Length: 131
Image (cartoon, rainbow, N blue to C red; front, side, top):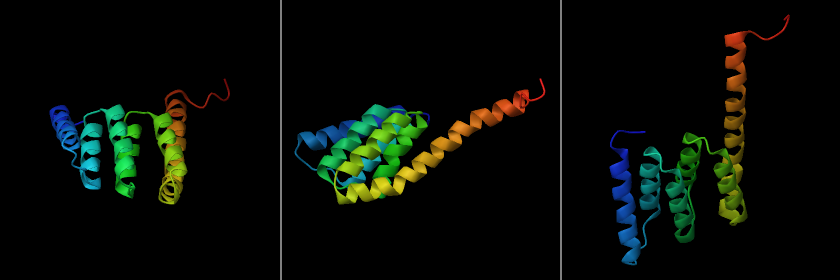
């Protein structure tokens, strides 16, 4: 998390809200930028809400999906990332293609994270064999 990231995230979210209130449709890049600011400040749930708003207005691209998944990953919210991928898979052909692209990466990252604590414990306390 960046120092000063929270005020920037709040400002980005305020701008997005003003645009929507004025019936100005934010661009895909605009939505993704707001998600990135929210994620960097640790606001995962609002970042995912922005992703859902993005999906209502646009077909998400790889950058948008990556940004949303990175928000989940940074906060250790694997279930939210899995739910996002499931929603994408059910949203149509473009979403299904993105879900197929990111699901193996998400699963591999989760498997690596699961192995890391076991490896650290083995290094710190030995393998437990011969005791």
